[in-house]
Length: 234
Image 1: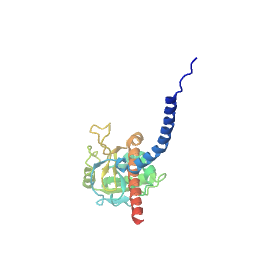
Image 2 (image 1 turned 60 degrees about the vertical axis):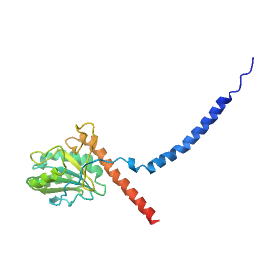
Image 3 (image 1 turned 30 degrees about the vertical axis):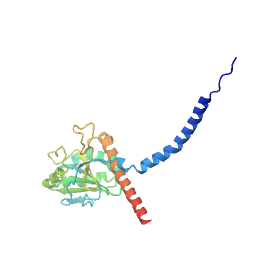
Image 4 (image 1 turned 120 degrees about the horizontal axis):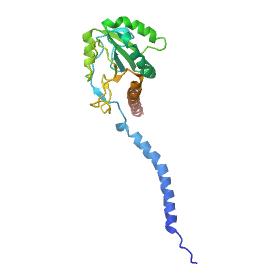
């Protein structure tokens, strides 16, 4: 019986494979690091759907201290002439959004009420205050024209209800821009201007994720600016 020839080709392939695997193991972490280091242009942000919404300095404070939108991440709700009837909506927003995010240092929640709805606010604040720190939740009042004008500046595709309430909560960024979605697969035109507070499920589905994206965007920008300043000072 003749001897089989030595499988030199197989041996060479095996050696090459070992070296290739070693190179990959060392190179991939470096490539990944460089990708993320230079990846700010690919960082996910929450789209601006309306620029430069109206300020709130024409409203009077009922409860809280908020005097402006600029330089704060703000969630705005419109509670209408009978705020207590919307306590369920307020509670959903409190449990799913406010309690999760009000620790962020520029976060504030603002509820807008027509003058005719002021009497309900004390009762709402008293009930919510039993389980919630309302330090960052502010209640402001204005006349019907002021409430309508603020809402109109959002340029949404929905109108306020007849009592000047809305089922939706709206997210305003540090520069007074309305944030939302411009490629949603549920809305007909793909644009989300506000988040439905009717059920907790609606808030879970969209708003929690979008708030995380927005706050992460600002954390990323803060870190980038801080690192640049450190480099300039060196």
